[in-house]
Length: 189
Image 1 (cartoon, helix red, strand yellow):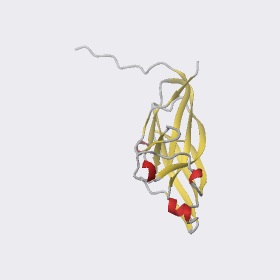
Image 2 (cartoon, one colour; image 1 turned 90 degrees about the vertical axis):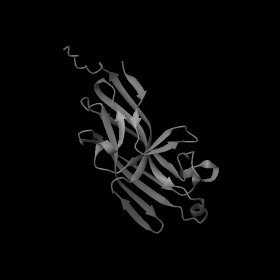
Image 3 (spheres, one colour; image 1 turned 45 degrees about the horizontal axis):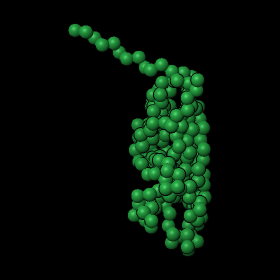
Image 4 (cartoon, one colour; image 1 turned 90 degrees about the horizontal axis):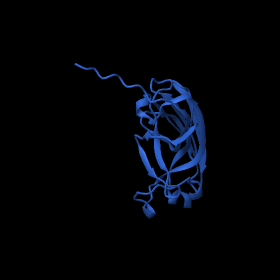
């Protein structure tokens, strides 16, 4: 029997909930240590696990730049999926362009902007599917590697630790359930 579940995950930089999709969005920060990434809990399983998620670029929306026709951005973000011993399992890339409001994937509520929206929003959506090996452990980390931003007036590259460079949502796991981990026997005095 194969189980497909919404993953449990710890987000070090919560972006918020999408107004249109009601999805939870989490920023992916750059870094070197798996503990600093988005931590996905891996349930007891037999065999490999299929993990899927949507990878989005982060865009700071400005109505003024859109009106002035200066809002164009082309984002390319690269993230790594790592085991907790810092072994790279796979990489994922999202590339998207922004010109107008319709290029946003969703808006995030709870902000100080017009209509109570946050200025930062997910742009583009790249569905990611990868296979985690059977012995991956009880957690994996999604950690940012680098971001390239093309603007009308130049190009920026970011890789410094702690910078949000992408956003994820819709994290799912598909696996064959396995036995629960064995607990250490209780010692009697």
